[in-house]
Image 1 (spheres, rainbow, N blue to C red):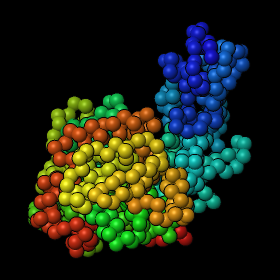
Image 2 (cartoon, one colour; image 1 turned 180 degrees about the horizontal axis):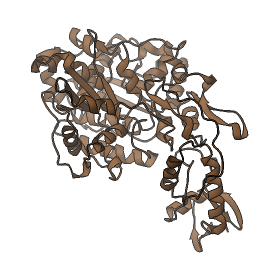
Image 3 (cartoon, rainbow, N blue to C red; image 1 turned 120 degrees about the vertical axis):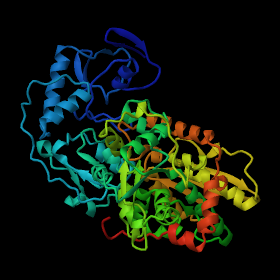
Length: 564
């Protein structure tokens, strides 16, 4: 196809939209409702262009042979301003709307001619998400994510024409819907009408309390994404700079949640082997992802016996900090505050669950997202890019490379198989990298031979695919031995608390960085990590032992008849 765009003739070999063609050729077209991973409906109309003399939206119209496209002229700019004003009628805060226009490459508008719609009441009933629709622009991104990618349907449209609003299903409070807290709606919301429930300001106040011993632990997916909030390209690891910045902020210790991931592998690999030997409750399904846990509890409670009993890595680590670390340092565990810095909004609810405590002491006291972490650091006027690298603190120390790849879909599975192979055979696998378990597809299958046993595996990300595999299990329960499920597209690197924008291409870059970190570490298997060996020798005893089960394992329950 031959297309002319702004006077330049371009030969195009594959189907694409006008917006995609313009972007590929360095031409900026303003967009408000567009997101590269979602279906474009052209709702806002600000990406309008002129094609063969006619105005049309560029985000949802494909190119065709002979098109003559003009991306800017007086007529186009006038129409974009009118469409933006129509979008702006949903905003109560004019200043915020103008900021949004600037971020979207829109020229400023002299005055907003349209009166705002009646706003809905702010909903902060959830542990994870706040819905404040005074700045909703009806772009529909949140609905698409919740309905099409996650198949949860906790958000919907209500009303018609200019009375249309985005709201919660059946008009309920968010906490009373089927919302699983994944935060994917907040990740794609362009105006902060949906956002995580923030805790960083409370933590900032606590950091001033000399009586409290405040510890940060950081997930593997944070270090490959946090730099984006400070202007760095996606996929750049900022591990050392992050530790330094958190120390400056005032945390007494900064620990590596990779250590908690290694604990998870020691326990989960042992659990897998035990179930295979007993031929009971197979397939084993991972339990690292709290949004996935909420999903199975709500929609498929009949499969709860297939879940691993392991707590998620940060909860395991929190339990050890309040016990093992407290004993070694002789600090009262009630004076220790554990702050988990996570890519995930659902971990906010997870940390509040009754199951996530030992002896009435919560494993984790606060969870903040990657975005909140950046806000906390910036509030101290710290520029992450200028920080000198520092190491994580002991006595637990850093985790293994196997912990690092927990960030990506397939990483939990790969790490578990590395260790399960050793536990079953007494030998290391000849090639540490299980590349057959890697990839971008949301539904992947593989078979791995360990000794005389062939394990059938599945790796799932996004809840749409989780639903798909659970429906398969209804027909053939014994097809798989082990299944990894992550709620968010791409796994934790695409979590609901990660920097905006997060797209498929950005997720690929973050994943590459996590696998590069794995390769750079001295120990790449959990069972080889000397810090892990030490904590079992000094404190836990053995995987699936009495103390391990008390501190590191839990149970989940049927929530199909109640809200979260």
